[in-house]
Image (cartoon, rainbow, N blue to C red; front, side, top):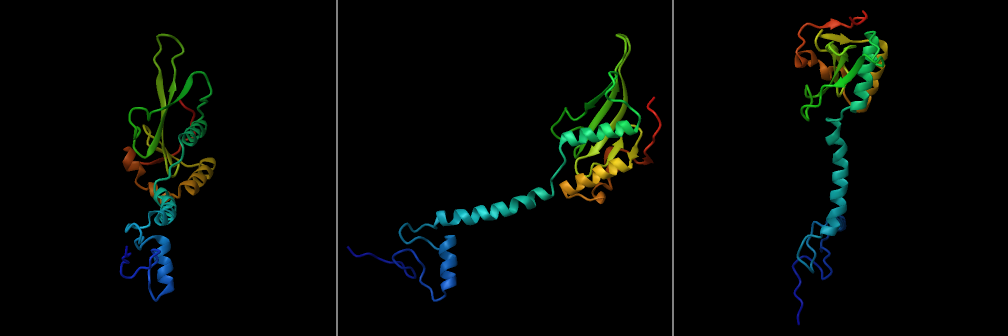
Length: 193
């Protein structure tokens, strides 16, 4: 039985070419068909594909990295302390407002409320503060008072978060508009009512 060879290929599936680099490159990456099967060398393509995928993943994540919920919760507690609210007190409770939808109360932000629980059965609970924390910059606002927080301890935390997420302070330049606060005020240090 006579074996027919395809033009340009040897019997072992190696390309015949005058350029040895092209032959090595094409055969190693599987761009030329295997003479025995007539199909591209998938086993040769797998390492190249894996390498390309591994290189692309960090770039895909770079634009979407966000801080964790626990970090945002700690930031809300620090801001509450700044507002002279003792959240560890039995009467004050920190709750997440991001439980209704997967996107959260305001997409792109973690939202927390501080509630003063009634001390007697007939007394109603009262919302004291509603903090909004950016998932990328840790920029923090009080939603009802439209108060923007900026103090040394918070700034240090924000720098750490932005290093982790790859964000810059300019990434949240439209945060007041997004959360519905058109008139910005600076953080207050007055005790909670």
